[in-house]
Image 1 (cartoon, rainbow, N blue to C red):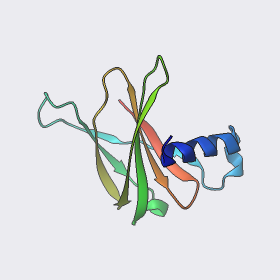
Image 2 (image 1 turned 90 degrees about the vertical axis):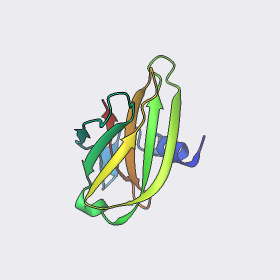
Image 3 (image 1 turned 60 degrees about the horizontal axis):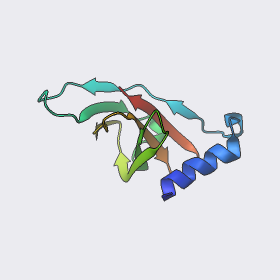
Image 4 (image 1 turned 180 degrees about the vertical axis):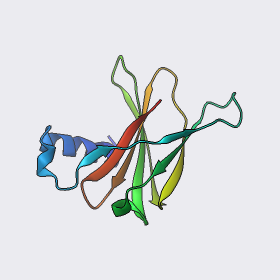
Length: 116
């Protein structure tokens, strides 16, 4: 288990569905799916408006690909300073559901959504 998986696992264990204990909630965020420049490319490009309280600071971007049958997860992680609007490129894995999670590492604050 890498560090991001450990953080997510620890948050889940500690709060076990009781997110009211956390002041800065976890929330789903809407995104705009941008058109592909070439239909043969599998990479999805999405544009996200970052909430004001998360802007201009280093955030952890985690991409999770989950196999719906086995629940096996492939996790990619990078740290990026994000401004008002961010464009992310996510390459889905065949047969897996893809999600992005943006975590503010010093607080239990994150935004996420499934890439469809």
